[in-house]
Length: 469
Ligand SMILES: *Cc1c(COP(=O)(O)O)cnc(C)c1O
Image (tube, rainbow, N blue to C red; front, top):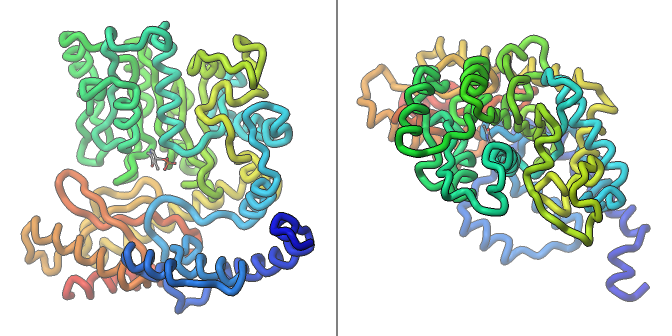
């Protein structure tokens, strides 16, 4: 037992350290109210800290990592959209990390492959699709959107895989409020700036669908081939849900692929109370949904669902003889045929562990709780004289504060920037900011279901205090 390898793989050492890690994480979960959400250090300070830091062993090292990481399980974390992970799913993550099944082909992850199909079929059913729907899990909403758009291209421009797509001048239409990754996907596919037609948004930051017909007409006149419309459910900045029914009608009339970027909000399908937010979702050709946003699963875990499951097989018309011999066959169990990844995390085990332990009702309870909390926060902010960008639809809310309504627009923008920076450096709360229709807003995602009214109250008061009353 003197080689490093023997030590590193020793089961007894694993067990000892493992219990220690569980103790550390239990302490982390047992939040002390005085603890900060974030111990702010600038990037250079943080780099210097770790350069000069030496730990006595793995436990002390991991404890240091925990202390210097933002704490999503803290009730005063109200920042970006990633949710606190359910502990059982983190344990499943530990199991899958150690097993390290690569998932590229069936035998390199038999259990995880079958569970992935179960997770996807269940999700597709919840979204209201027929059994013809299928898909897979992939590494994040950004990659899922790119993959869906590649499938759209394969379907709408046959032969583009071999010949390229330059001659066709393809394009898609998407709300100006969409996540930046849609534009990135367009540019990756080589469609250029003309490949993304941004549809203006209305006063609630939803796609203003009245612009769709004239923009399509204009594109045709300019020799551009629009092949798809991307709906946002919801938009990242404001949490605005596009009208999916209207976009679905438009796509059907014009023979366009309809992709829904539901990275954040497609999860509302799991709630009987809020599934009307994504009405029309089951008319999409493809849907992206992050389990790590509103479904409390460790990041990254993203579902990409196709209404016609077979559409996914056209995405990558490639051969890889070392992985599978039947290139042309739709083998559902060799998932890398459809996904961008070759080696992939065993994501399905995390989702399935939640479903197995608590059923789909846990998702529903979570969604209902955080959306109700956000409405409560909206009321509280309004009472205290804050301006809301729009009434929140889900758990994202944008707001600003103009003390005694005395400041000009530009000054309010600057004030919001300053307040957000001050809060970050305080570390007592974590919130973010965004820009909507040329104004700067403070932005919260009420992603922790244990955030209390008292936390919201104190956050609002702190902002008023920072603003000088
Ligand atoms: C978060 C988000 C994305 C990006 O997803 P990742 O999982 O972070 O890659 C894309 N679209 C929308 C609408 C999002 O909210």
